[in-house]
Picture 1 (cartoon, helix red, strand yellow):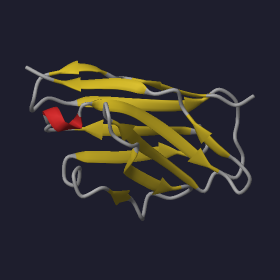
Picture 2 (spheres, helix red, strand yellow):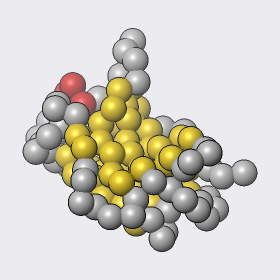
Picture 3 (cartoon, helix red, strand yellow):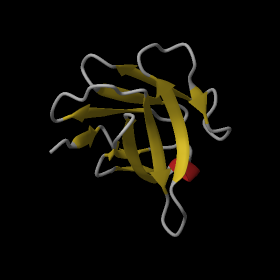
Length: 117
């Protein structure tokens, strides 16, 4: 059974940076999109960023993170990353990675990101 495992979350001060990583436990074939989503307490899960796979040409970002977050991925290694800079308290949430194939929709278990002084 495929599992996506996230890492890199933690506590950071406003203005700081974190890099999230997500890797699949076994090889996944036919991925066409990889992405990150987040869910803050009391709110619905929301889109953060996606990247087509293969190829980094067309990335998409939520307006709230444009210019601060960068998504990247390696289809051959089934990994996706999220570089988060200039973090704000409103970025506090559980962050989930996602990998989509034609027949499957894989999600990670989530990693907590807390931005606080």
